[in-house]
Image (cartoon, rainbow, N blue to C red; front, side, top):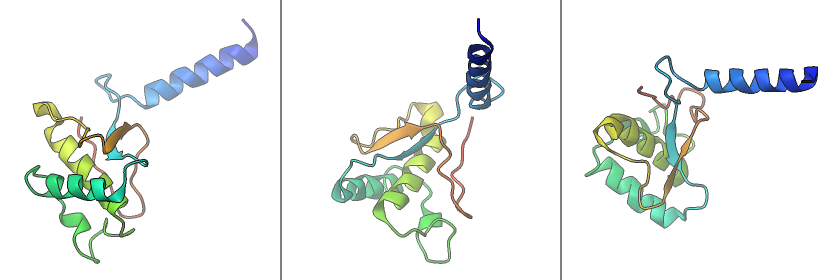
Length: 118
């Protein structure tokens, strides 16, 4: 096996291990799908923050850490993830009528932290 291939395999293994938690689970966040139209995102966002039980307080007012950027897509991503993290151990999914998707890239930005619950 060549040295370059060994280094590539080692780098891939380290990346996989870095994306796992201590119990072997992969770290996942739930975000709005880039291809979903705003009106569908708004419907899903309204459900998540209402009947869904997500804590949407951090996206509600201009002084909250996740209000900016003030877009439906950004607010939906925060709400979807909050719902998913809160309820995934009770069977919740990151679906939202096909408006959401799982990512292994932390969507946190600036002072807005997207929680991850193992």
